[in-house]
Image (tube, rainbow over all chains, first blue to last red):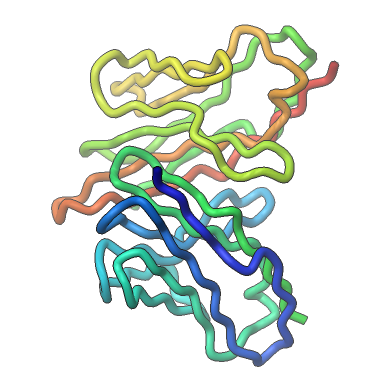
Length: 110
Length: 116
């Protein structure tokens, strides 16, 4: 069966530090992968999606970037975190039949 | 631009009351529609989905939704809610682009509180 792993679960980082959040999927090949940010009262904001290795589409301009070095690995990064990057980040995968979400990462930038 | 609107941001009901949460989208092309639920402290879970066929979709835990194409709507319903239905509910629209990719868009969510 397909599973999705996302880590770390929580992260506290100082302003200006780098960020790397990792997401891996098991049990499927060539999934569509997504990074979302969830904010209270704002729902889920799509940040990036990828339909294949090395293919990244950005939905909103921001301080973050994404990479897909392997078929089932999706990484969210930043070179220098801002306070406004604090939030709850969710990874998801889809084969067109719906989305399966990871458990999320609570990022606090201090 | 495509968008998904959930008009009810906060809903408070008593147990056994009926529920209807509104969801409208703005897109005229091929769409797939979903409702997700997030219970306190838990992952987002799929409640139900519509791809084609019968526009009345049955989901888990007694939920159903009706796709009305002419109204661009996909409202979620439950005839009798329980305290355990307290959660955040998200409507989502999966848009099929000409390039063959699915572009997912979520509504802002509706917070449902059910009083025992």
